[in-house]
Structure formats: structure tokens, C-alpha cells
Image 1 (cartoon, rainbow, N blue to C red):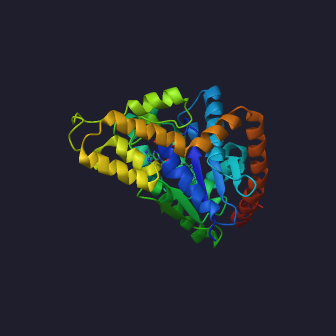
Image 2: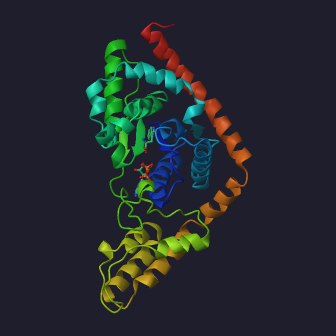
Image 3: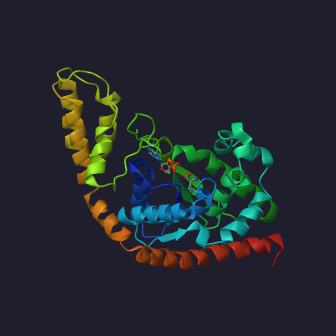
Length: 323
Ligand code: ADP
Ligand code: TRP
């Protein structure tokens, strides 16, 4: 079975889009195999945007609790903070020296921000190289990511190829695994649900806040009696990913038949979120009440991860003539 690895930045608390689009699919893949997978919190990447130490800590804790509440098994899988395996920084330097400048200058993640170059730091520029190091340091074979990360995986493969051409077969070349279907969960305003648009649903919110968020989803002004199109409705587009299939079908029929108001659809969505994430919500609260336990879990993961990292890094160091 191929080795699975993926990371999530700790630039905010994970939302429904992150969970459905990234966390759950990655865990489903991993839980279907005996071999351990590698899941980490990309807290070094977060430094390109988060500078407040309290915020960084809080985000890291929330991301960790989310993974664990969603079913990550730290006994089987490797679960760690990127920053706590500092070997990745040394490896990033080596890889930097095999990364052509134009490749980074053409990365979307950089280009999108380069209109205002005064605000771009070198960390943001070499973001894809650190990501390549994350992947290559653990000999990952399959990397489940959202479509937005596809280019970063191509860069990783190019860098590994350049390195191997120089030194022989040292690095494992990974494959991206992109789930096009669940890629875009819409946010409350109809755009892609994203931390950066502040249009996200946090499934771990209190019932009151969660309800308020769901009720704020933008809909059109079709009157209650009129038939409605489920495929263009933001409420239904979220509902279909979380309700049981027969209930999704009956809501679809109710849309088409008319007589159902959007308020009612939102109620159903709110109930479906509570239902679907009942277990996760309880677990999350428990986990967040005991940060020391999360810390302990991560520390254990980091010790294990470091062993794997050092093995690969020593091979790299030797190949380059440093040892
Ligand atoms: P955000 O846009 O909230 O900053 P990230 O870029 O940190 O999210 O994404 C983390 C992971 O979650 C990525 O793998 C991404 O593909 C996935 N993801 C983010 N938003 C969505 C969404 N609206 N629908 C599905 N998956 C998403
Ligand atoms: N760049 C990824 C994102 O924003 C997070 C990430 C960092 C990552 N390193 C990784 C994902 C390695 C997969 C593999 O979502």
C-alpha cells in the first residue's frame, strides 16, 4: 500500500470545507489501510501569514483537535507539528539549491500576491520548496490535496527529479490525489467556503452560533410556493454532502415540487450538521479541554516522525557529500 501524507496549515480554525474536502477524505483513505499515514500541521507555512504567537498556538491546537475528533488514530498514524521536526528546514535549504527561480516565480500562490511585492516575504516565495521538503522527507507516495495544491505537487516532483538526476535514486517521487468532486463546498455567501472570505461554517461552534451561521446562507428570492432549483441553491449544495442519501433525495424532491421555503431548508441543514458531526463535536470539546493531552499526543508523533525524517535526511546528506 502506498504511503499517504498530507498537511494542513494552521492559519485559522478548520471549517466544514476543510473537513469535507481534505480531512475526511484523507482519513478515509488512511483508515482503509494497515500502514501508517503521515498527517501534520503545517505551522511553519502559517508563519507566512500569522505573526501573533497566541493565535499561532490556538490555531495549532484547533487543527490538532479537529484531526483527532474526525478520527485520526495517533497510535497507527504519524501525527505531528511540522515545526517540531526541524530537519525539514535543513532539507528545504538543500532543495532550494535545486529549484529554478522561474518555477517559484510562476507558482500561483506567489503570483496571486505578487501584485504587491513589498508585502511578499521570502518565506512566501519558497513556500512550495518547504512543501516539497514536507513530502520528500517522509517518502510519501500519495498526497491527497485540494485542486489548488496541484501545482505545488508538480513543483515537488520537479525538484525531486532534479535532485535524483544529480545524485541517483535518493528521493521518492510522489503522486497527487485530487478529489475533484468534493472540491468546492460553497460558503454562506455562495463563494468557495474559505477562511479568507469569512464565509465559513465552523462545525464546532455552539449550537446557537452554528444555527446563526446556517441561517445566514444567501439564497435567492423565489417565493415559498414556487418550485426551486436545488443545484443552484447554496443550502442544498452543502446539505447534499452531509445528509443521508435518502434525505438528500427527499429534499431535492421538495425543492422541485415547490411549497418549501428556504428557511425550512436551512433548518434541515442545521439539523443535518448536528447529526452528521455529533460524535466529532463531543470529542472536540473533550479534546479542547485538555490541551496537555493534545500536546502529549503530538510530542509522541513527533518523536516517531523524526526517526523517519532522519533516516531520509542522512541518506540525502551522504549523497551530497556532507557526511
Ligand atoms: P482556506 O481556503 O479556508 O484557507 P486551505 O487553503 O487552508 O483553506 O485549505 C486546506 C484544505 O482544505 C485544502 O486541501 C483545500 O483543498 C481544502 N478546502 C478548503 N476549502 C474548501 C472548500 N470550500 N471545499 C472543499 N475543500 C476545501
Ligand atoms: N500548502 C498546503 C495548503 O495550504 C498545506 C501543506 C503544507 C501541505 N505542506 C504540505 C499539503 C504537504 C500536503 C503536503 O493546503
